[in-house]
Length: 194
Image 1 (cartoon, helix red, strand yellow):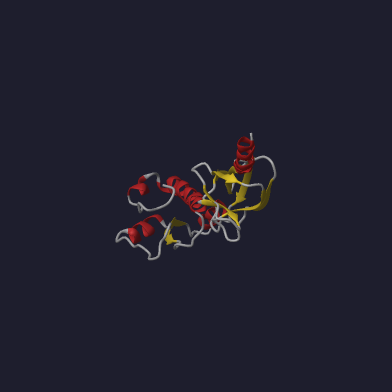
Image 2 (spheres, helix red, strand yellow; image 1 turned 90 degrees about the horizontal axis):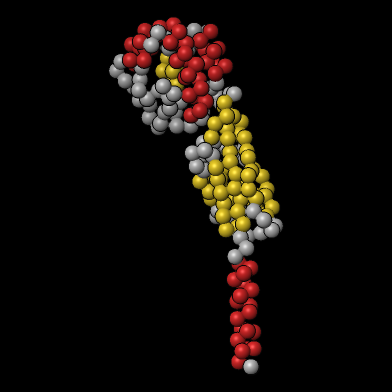
């Protein structure tokens, strides 16, 4: 009997610890972006729990999930915008936190309204997603002259892709109305939103 009692005294703390350590929780939710009047999945590639090493990738619909979290206070941030537009504290006590929904208002430097203004003032542009070095095509000047538009590369730190696409879609509608669809044959192939 003494051996059995001693065995229980030794094994009980390990059983209690293993049960305690299996009480882990999760934080999950979704992030959308408001671009003009459209609600789109967020471009933020990651969500982070500040002051920890936890990182969650967003899927194509803007969903994220952190798992295996201990009870405690977590600061949740998205990683695309500086400063972060999602910056909130989550408290986990005895259950997971699910179904969080965030709506980020995109900081568009270019908008549909700007495209309307550019058309009205006779200065429409076709926006290109740029990189470190600008790209120039031999026939692009002919297109600019023929259709009275200017190509503009935004560089690698330009506005969000969704904002550029929204701007360009308005310019494309303007070109369709003014010239028909013939312009599409000679426009640069790296134009966003076409």
